[in-house]
View 1 (spheres, rainbow, N blue to C red):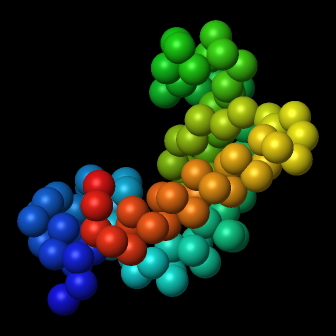
View 2 (cartoon, rainbow, N blue to C red; view 1 turned 90 degrees about the vertical axis):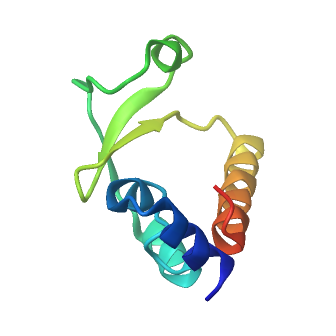
Length: 97
């Protein structure tokens, strides 16, 4: 049993585990994130006020889960977001939350 599976067992909350994608292997998570499709949701009630005033918007993925999104303004923003995704995948693989 790897660290992610141990964490999944310790949490013992299917909804929380699904929210953080702990119920997926790291390989499956990478596939899911690579194929995710977000649709802007102008009527998002889940948008935190602080995010809204900073230019973020609400979106829904193909499974109907809410997301907070912000347009990128150039290659530096895109690189930063890819590094954040990499950090999330490393945390996921190492079983940290």
